[in-house]
Length: 117
Length: 112
Image (cartoon, rainbow over all chains, first blue to last red):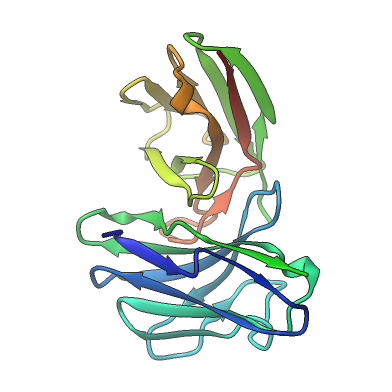
């Protein structure tokens, strides 16, 4: 099974609705992050998911639009709220501090391809 | 904020040829990472560089940490079809920071 699993892998959603993306890691990790990759673009950090407290958002991203949870050291969710076509992107979960992958490096899940109609 | 510019933006090479790409920053980086992204997948870490001037290989891939600390280079030798994908450089904008800034990407296409 995958070290970092994301669900769903892809979805097509109607504007105005919300989608919650799940990220499950097979071991406890130090840090978890959420990135966005818009079509044909590079990766942009949305936020750091903090275990047991509010996420830390990067400039241009807000909690109302992208609420994040991290209830424990192996799981996090990202919700894309009140979606519009501009939210169509790949959303990627990433981790640092995985005991087998390497403590100091950033590793990614396979991503969630979101299309908003 | 810091930007990482990659060149070329895209490249087309014949199978068996080498591919070279580079990444430049407007400021100093203390770590350089190179990732590859296949369609429909998340980026996969290829090589990590930690010291200025460092040259590191991973199979047919070789990467160098520029001595100015503002650039890095990736070379792929004797390309094969599975090398197709998008290559990203990345680095932490602040020392000891796990958050990464990613480059603009280089799309590699291999002509059979």
